[in-house]
Length: 447
Image (cartoon, rainbow, N blue to C red; front, side, top):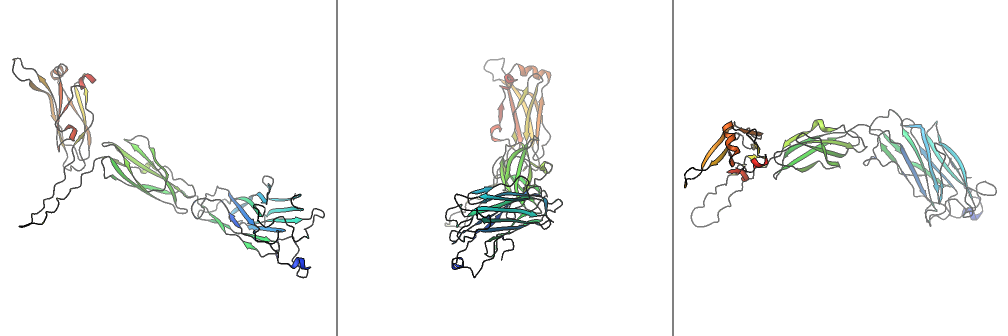
């Protein structure tokens, strides 16, 4: 027997028509807020909304006359004062309780489709946390439960959604519930005098704690200008959902690189000589977001990696003793330089120079500015005159510094009236596009 049913118990001594094997059936389920991950993680400020669905199977031999749906709330975990009834549906009938209703009773005339009136009683027992929905098929003439065994408000579901129904409600998590608490349970559905059928159990994991994360490594990549970046994070309750990774160039504002990505590593394509800082911010499966991770940023200056030495191929077998292979030494990386700046009025020449990180002994750079003076006698070659020359202190490995050369007043006067050449020499050698001499004759016009 179902104690929540308003229908009279089945009478085995009733006339044969009532003893025939005719009964309703029920595939059913309970669902709620999806949240994050398999545990359906949510923050405590997210309302918990649930729906219980039921169906009179297409193979059932009779309509369901009385339906009871029962769900149990835990008053220690949810705030019963926030309970609200949601939409109630059966067949093509949809009923909406008044806003904020915790209990509700209504009737729905199903004629002419069915010669019935459906009565629905729904409500929460504040003392116990028990929610009950009762559907009863009434005779329109007497408004008593119908005596016709083949009449019922929910027929076999041979023509969906005629044989389907659902109830819904919402409730808030109780204040003070700790992160890591699981809230949920199943619902019980009874058709007529059939046995109670329990739905699946639906639960939500409460998580109010923010995750933590950090940039793990920022290293030179396999190609020139590439940086291999990795990051990681942890969350004590629901777990990491995604990461936001941002990047700053030469001390500028952080800009998005990856947003809401589950990946924990990637290669950033930068420009040689520039410095990049990376920061990460984690988001857990419940939607909690870590405080901005800019304070834990890690930086690196982009360089070109040293080529991997290629071994000499092994000699082919032949007569006589085998020759010993001699490995080819890896070429050293070159000193690199930036844009040459020539301030004509001040007589200053400036060049940013970078010493490779692999050059542990540092780099020596000499900067010279020369001009060509025509010979007074015919047939004589022009004379090269050095206007200024300086060998700078050793640059440390990995350092970038702007080297400046200043002309004397007499040198400046000569420079203004002649063509110029900038000569750069360094140990180790300069990058390929400035190994010998860089012409600067156009600098005078540009300035």
